[in-house]
Length: 434
Image 1 (cartoon, rainbow, N blue to C red):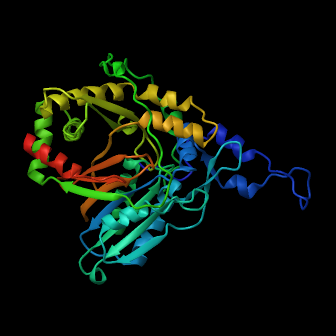
Image 2: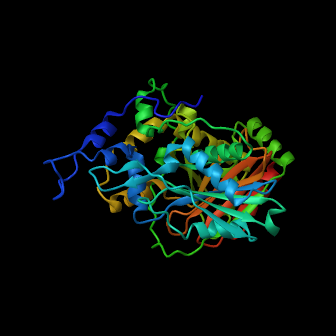
Image 3: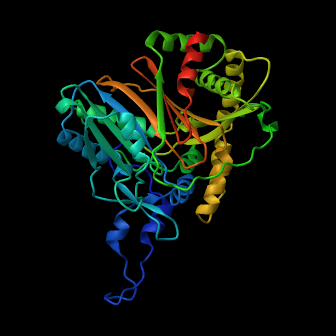
């Protein structure tokens, strides 16, 4: 149940940060006064993982978008109003980042989420454009929206929500999309407290059960870390595909029959596509692990760690055998997710270069698959939801966003390289396997 604003325990670290005196000014009447307006604006310091992301973003813009196709049109003014109500419910949507102190912190900010209105056009073009416009963390807010209408809005609208990665992951963004749809349908949301950093929440949970035994993936050779491409505001390419309702349902059923998951099948299909390309001997797929299934709250905030699923070229090219292997690797990673969070929290990078090294070592892969699962309740007014679309300024990266809405599994690939039909190839293999 949503809590009232301000509920929850006081974070002692945030309190110390808020009470830290500012430097004296020639205009001060006392020797060392406290800037109460500054202190009262602090929401909380960034968590350890959020700090790594923020240091990385300071040189490499990372934001991502969800595209919501509405069955009916929404006027720009109504959308702006609903977004303001969404900000009132989710504190990090009304926040900026102050990097000026000993530790960066989220601060309250009064600006509303800006709405860019586009008549006509394709949401894929606008989603690519969103990757060319960095979000200023010191500005406010760390999210924005684009409204696409066609023929004056007579034939529906598309709302593109874009989030800077310090405040949300894909599942957090999907929570925001669900709440926005509820607001547009006339519902009221209760304000939520400032969500805690994931390290703090996991520390307060009861001890986890003994993790599974090693699945052998630790014996795989460690690849060279990726390299960064200097941000040049170039628009990436976006490629989409989808499965119909019957195929999507058969995929779920068949995956269970083969002791697999849909995510395992997606990884297998992606690997098979890439292993067929000349010179491919091994494929590494980066997969975010959602920590909400480990007991953390479903909120608009970061709640994930990443793992890598590894495939080698072999005579056995069956999708389901590879899907079982991928599922086993993912289960092992999920069982050890708390250890991964603790490891990230122990890094303490001093600058952007060290954060880049940490991120590149953890995410070196041939493909990333971010599967947000099923859109859930309160989304019936949306005809389709696509995403996330995202780039992280890594050379040759391919990021596949997956989301199931209205019974249809949808795929969207974002890359600065050539898509080369990868998305449609994955969809074709999944359909053929069921």
